[in-house]
Image (cartoon, rainbow, N blue to C red; front, side):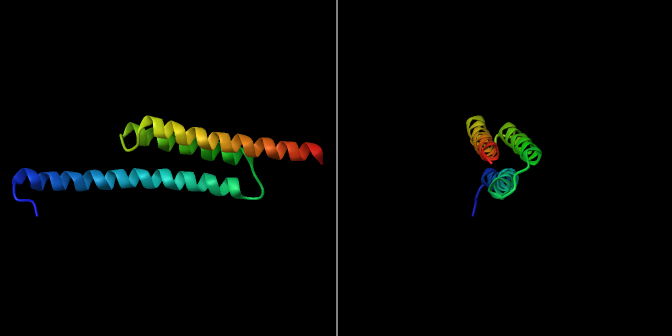
Length: 99
């Protein structure tokens, strides 16, 4: 239990910051999960993947702007999913070319 007024205020502000950060982290996780589920699906729609990737990038940029995650982490996640999409689409195009 905080004893001083400043300690009480620190508890209040840290609780507020925690809910703010958890809200943004939840948004990032949800956007990444929907993109991952689409990548794991059997049929792949390139337009859908592009839309989901851009929405993930938008959420990551906003979260880094809000100082919830660092810019480097946001860029790392964006790069990871962009590379996965590129690999998946190129693999699919190679298979279509052979058949």
